[in-house]
Image (cartoon, rainbow, N blue to C red; front, side, top):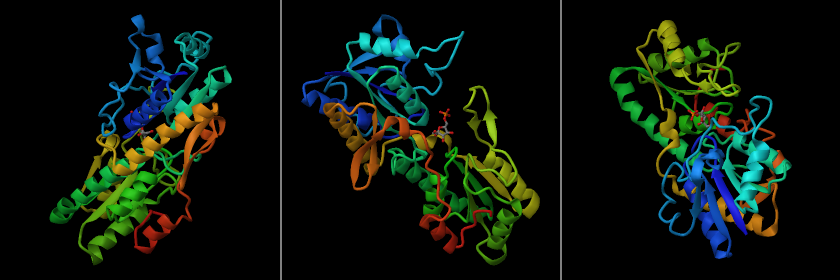
Length: 352
Ligand code: F6P
């Protein structure tokens, strides 16, 4: 067999580990693997520059590397209709022209939706879920999430000293468009006083009351963690750019919240955005192992001819779900989850 691999959407720590595990597993079965660079863009690059042979040498020493050796994009959707048609059929044809029997698509909701449509159009596809946001319902956890949480938690931990020394309120914006998993976990692990997540629209009066309490009865500083997709009750998500239709760039909520706290509570406040720091760097051991398991599982699915499926973690097993269902539902933070309850019982405010 000969199988193509690509990575699409925003990068996440662990992509390279998946590539390595899939490639080595496939080679050990006597198969060939080729990588498509930058999502599907590589198929359209001149002189075959967008296609790379993945052999043992190509994937040596990459398990610990962030990013992706294949490159990625969250802009070039081949299914976007331009001048009356899209390039989906062309993608399928070009992958077949490469002599490939199928594609392993490593991506988040956007990339896996594209992959499912390509499968419908005649390409054999296996999906591997990726997103630091951990918002795919079909798998209990995606690789990259654990690393992002660790990075955010470390950063929040470092803010305590300045907050305390200056008696300030520090408002930290973390990633999470629809789901507040990173905010919830890093806020809890970083001992934030207020955690604002997309699933719980907040009331500024309550946020300020929680902050004020810290100054009146406590240590006179406060840490607020806010997901980029959080919004006040009746308000909108803060957006910094709308250039890509259907996928605006979120950002600015920390600054908004900080200004409102200064105005209403009168405390000196600072805001910061952790941004892409959360997507970079070496994956944690947990993410490395999960990513390697996903890559190996994709080989097993291909060997069984289980195309049209996505690998998924359902502890303790890595198994498969239909690709069409993979992106059907988002994994949001359940409001009655024990993690939310844990935060509440610790006295953390969600601004509700
Ligand atoms: O989907 C993952 C994510 O990290 C989101 O949380 C964030 O909104 C987005 O990527 C940012 O993507 P980029 O800046 O690369 O367009």
